[in-house]
Length: 293
Figure 1 (tube, rainbow, N blue to C red):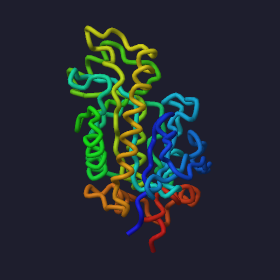
Figure 2: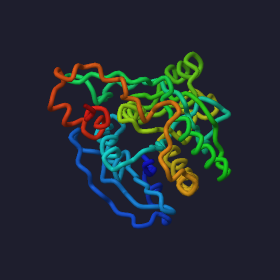
Figure 3: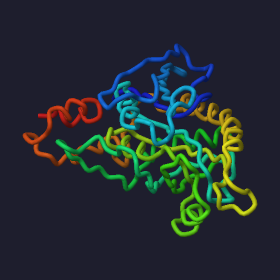
Figure 4: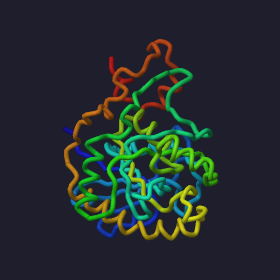
């Protein structure tokens, strides 16, 4: 059995843990273009941890500008087996106020301007996203949140919007009242889809910063209040990562939902019809199945 390697996608503060030993920045190139940044790699209690600043150090990329394919690709190239995505979000529920960490288990993708697959134009694949979150990984994150007494909710639906503007009032009410979503954010799609195509176990921790624009007593969303709450969430996020790393299984555990075997029967293009140039780009993402005789 191979060793677990824990990947964390998040912002500044999360990757500055003093407990991260032998920490260093390692640039990794990707055939899918420029990733958001180099990887911050180190160990916590002998577990290898790989951090990726989603927006780049200094927050250089908007959600629409992030190269999600390159980001997932370099995590795979770094040997990551499990990915925990930490991201700010708005809440559609009074029971999920700012400061709450939501372990979402479903997504609705409303993004419109992003590359959403590694496949196509020479090698077609269709993976299942019925269960977009790896249940074993989510359970481990939930246990860490509970152990640290961090306010959290298990389960929920994440509405992924394009941004970078926030929702109109009509949109906010639609997502909350008609679509029954629980939180809203701009970054977890197509990230979750691409992680599944790369056979990475994936889990989202949506960190609530605001009530979006639906709440009659909280007014419109403004960036100043969001940033203030994001800073307040950093301490909890650091505690979560530290606890998770210390308790995480050192041996890579098979995913009961098949996240780590998503490509087993997904590629439908005949071998003789596959584009060699695309296959070369897929060496990390799909090498497990493409190299089989």
